[in-house]
Image 1 (cartoon, rainbow, N blue to C red):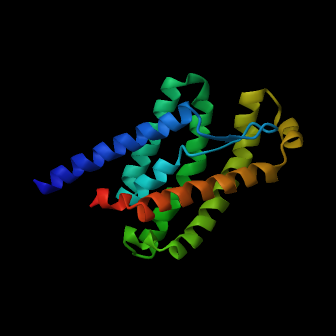
Image 2: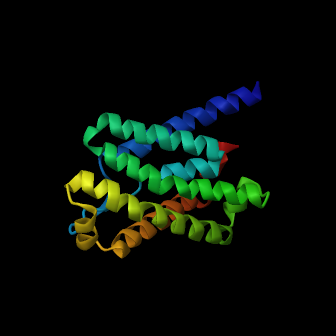
Length: 188
């Protein structure tokens, strides 16, 4: 019986985190660059919180549900929701990969030093994904620019910088909330 009540508790918390993720997108909590239109926000913080609390399966579910809710309730942001997912999912997926490869428990990330290598790896993967996807998919759809014009208008290092900062924001805030503000107790 206890196992079922834990599943229900985890699903309820996950549903709340997915909803919170969507709300932060819909009211757009964050900073938007006036020159490039890119955002630094807290949408994916809840996805990383979910990973740190419940693992990769639940984080994947919460991130997909959050992105779907964003798409349904703000149809003009379907592109943004998809890009947010593509950019942010590698963070918790790479964290999960490190746990699996090194055979560590999820609590391994309670020590900030254990986040350094997975975080650097996730940032590199994120940048390798989002730079070409922005130039050849997102920017042409959003602005109508050709990839060549997009590259001339927005240098690759600007896209990389925004994504590096975003990844650091996601991981840092999630870690602080889970371990310093003791959200971890809700996963037990």
